[in-house]
Image (cartoon, rainbow, N blue to C red; front, top):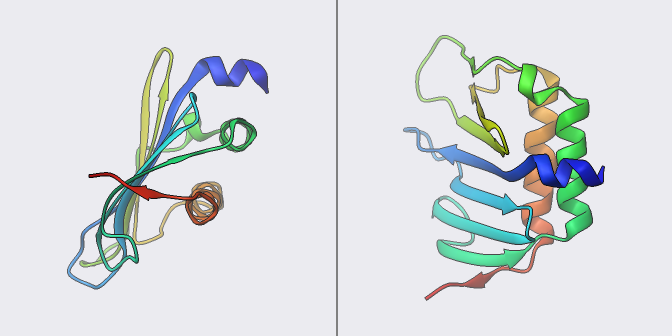
Length: 131
């Protein structure tokens, strides 16, 4: 698990805007324990916040993403229709970047699990508003 910390530099998830009132925010976790959160709409925290992601939590998230073969997931999962929530999950590796777009929760269980774990980590972190 320790070698993943060298390979995975950053993990982010962004819930993007739609016409329906879904939460809109972006969270970024870095392998140096830095956590950033930007809340935009339909969330409790509006604005930019900073926090700390525990080293072991980052490692476990990176390990989970490796076990669920995040790199092998398609770049886009789509369903017919409009105004569905869209989630962009991105990993910055030492050798490149991988983003998965999960529109309308149409992706496989692997991306669902990753999103839920990231949502849980967001709730676990103590966030301080940045001026």
